[in-house]
Length: 386
Ligand SMILES: [Mg+2]
Figure 1 (cartoon, rainbow, N blue to C red):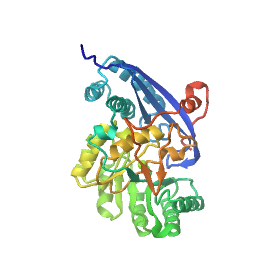
Figure 2: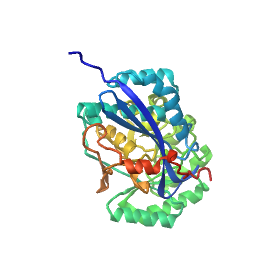
Figure 3: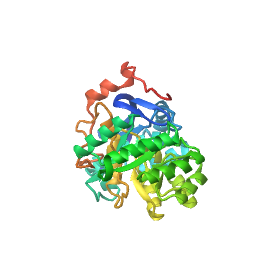
Figure 4: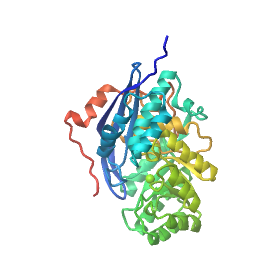
């Protein structure tokens, strides 16, 4: 009997618009809806794989939009992969890297679906495909981004009381530096030692702003500052990393292993915010992790505010990382009014649980997918750029 090779038969993409539970105020946009791009891959043996490629705030965050992610997959990636061996994930990644430059989030969505399909066919988790999980749960931060100190304090105290989060990331950079530092000081004073306070500036500061900002943040007990200046200003990031004790984390500056090498070579960060989407997939993210580990940097599991699907993909990777010194922010599903998984990701005791089962360990709720699909004539739009 001939051993038939399982092939990639079909790759379907869809855009989902899911409302957020409150306005999420970032330095560059306010999100009221999160837009996710899902990939559903069908294989010749009847198995399936699912993936997600999601970004934040349309094109205000980075060079890929939900629409460009879908278009890159449908127009360029899918035609190259149809008919190929479903199990040859490395071959698919190499081919796609050869044919498509950049477009890391689009690549990640497809790659996640390939790993999910492979894990399901073999009956093992994606974490197992990467050598096995060493954690069943990870510490998980929450982002305070209502834009108002009193609302943020109430939200933080609620989260601590419910034992859901005791790590808070504050989104700042929209107001004057002194106002932002005062906002952070109020929140830190309110929560005291019960919580770790960090901030994300999303590239909004000049180097001059950042010199004042980091000193002020450090003085009020903030532990870490994420991407204070533009991603390409590695010299500025290096100066800030060296000049202050507060940890400097690279996020937008970190798009895959090549950027990881540049940042390490320049000494331009203390911590990597490792994101599956921004890295170009689970495998590339694992390479970013390896570079960070080899350089002795701190690691943090970052999010693009994915649904439970993309969150599960990240959990499968980070479950296998021994020292995740700065924890995770894999709370995406909690910011959405509804999760799209048949069984939602579990959050409790200040941690997020790694889904168990084959592949990503999750499946979609078809009714919710139908309800939130953009091509089913819904017209919710992200309010970006205000
Ligand atoms: Mg960030």
